[in-house]
Amino acid sequence: MGYIEDALSYIKDTLSHYLSNVFEDVVLELIPKLYEIGVVKTRPIEIGKWWYKGEEIDAVIRDPGKSTTFVEIKWRELDKEEALNTFRELEDKAARTGLMSPRNYYIIVTKKAPSDLEINEHRVLIDLKTLNKLLSE
Image 1 (spheres, rainbow, N blue to C red):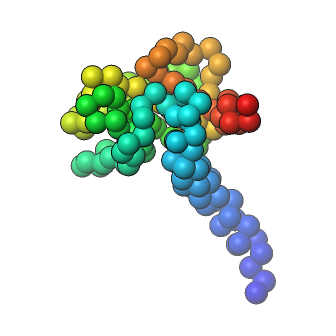
Image 2 (tube, rainbow, N blue to C red):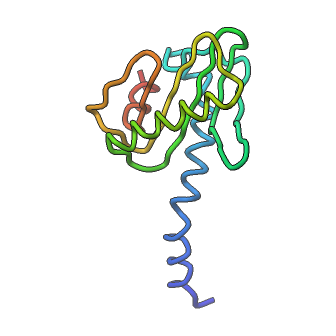
């Protein structure tokens, strides 16, 4: 119809938002596989989102009475400070859910993550490159 520039502009403006939704859906579908390979420590008996008064957690994985994993999914590159802040925010939101268990884990899945961030058994940071490597092994 002759609006090629308008169409291209629209695609450029909305593509990242679209991809963030797709990325979130893909990560949610991969949760059972991530449990099988040991990335997710909680047996995925219950999986869902959590939201309350404008706050959201992208995925909460529960084995009721045993463990809970809280997952934040970000379609962007995080630097070290942003990753640490995201972990703190996720832990704060998790504490307000009423879904805490004897063992709690926190996972951030992002487009690109810093390689020098100290991680432990309860905090896991995964980016696309790492995710691809884990799933292809």
